[in-house]
Length: 341
Ligand SMILES: Cc1cc2nc3c(=O)[nH]c(=O)nc-3n(C[C@H](O)[C@H](O)[C@H](O)COP(=O)(O)OP(=O)(O)OC[C@H]3O[C@@H](n4cnc5c(N)ncnc54)[C@H](O)[C@@H]3O)c2cc1C
Image (cartoon, rainbow, N blue to C red; front, side):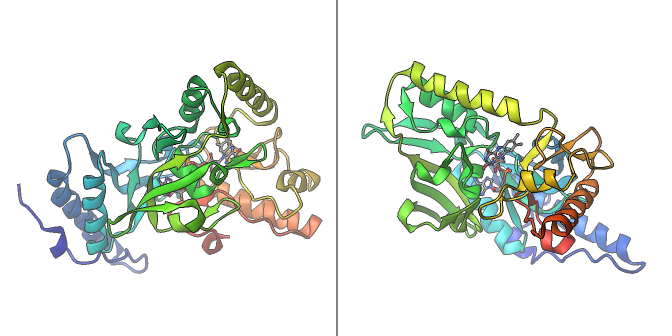
């Protein structure tokens, strides 16, 4: 097989979309993605997954969107480093992927290297002698809750029912039932875009509503969490059941990406949408849930174009009826909402 040194590939050129020479440029770009893929595949560990044009819809909870030009599931820090350094040298954008529960993938897919934490090596749960717990970024929140309950550790129950993993919850500072992810974080280990590993204490991090500044351009590898107390397994299990029941009663069962809009200060996005008469509003197969107005659900074959149009319509109607500008909470993967709304 022909070996290509990624450092010789040069920066990726953006695909232009005007004029008759578009097919040629698209082919040229496809060839460069192929070259990067061929150059990197032999350098990665045997258990790492590394593919071209990986479909992403099935890796999200709302099941919408196209594929990733490049997709990797590295199984070690070394592989992660190799990928990040090669991507930086070639001018390729990198997008971390958790459980895809807060994402809308564009129909055309993403012009990037998507790095998923799905490899089992990132799903660790390790109680420490001082009472803290080390968790890998790929550990599902559901499993974190289950394992903590089994170990009699209380304080993480509010995360039950958030269908993400630890990495996604850190990046989004996920919150529910009055708690936020960073309430229980002591430190985060991350890897920068240039492949440097760092551990940051909670006090050095800038976190806010659905936001963590330090994870904008870095990938979380894991975190040290502090339970509020040691208690008995059954008490933790009972609290988890209370939260589970609350969600079952108030959230739709159809595929969704959770709450579409952030709550404006002192207000509820769901209530504003409901009061604007938008429950059941539909574009194609994208629908404002009749059960919870801040959820948009995929009724079967929704596209990201349908969903974006529905977001536009809901914002316009709420602005007109209530005088409030709603801001999306879900992320448009690889793009900015302001560029499409
Ligand atoms: C039914 C339902 C209920 C929900 N309820 C809640 C709720 O109560 N509270 C709440 O806050 N959210 C809720 N959500 C939204 C979502 O589950 C959270 O935002 C969750 O934290 C996203 O985690 P994820 O692993 O799916 O991340 P993804 O959706 O895969 O990614 C989200 C963002 O995090 C980035 N990211 C992912 N992994 C990493 C990493 N390791 N390092 C750095 N960045 C990373 C991605 O690039 C992306 O920018 C809900 C969603 C659904 C579908």
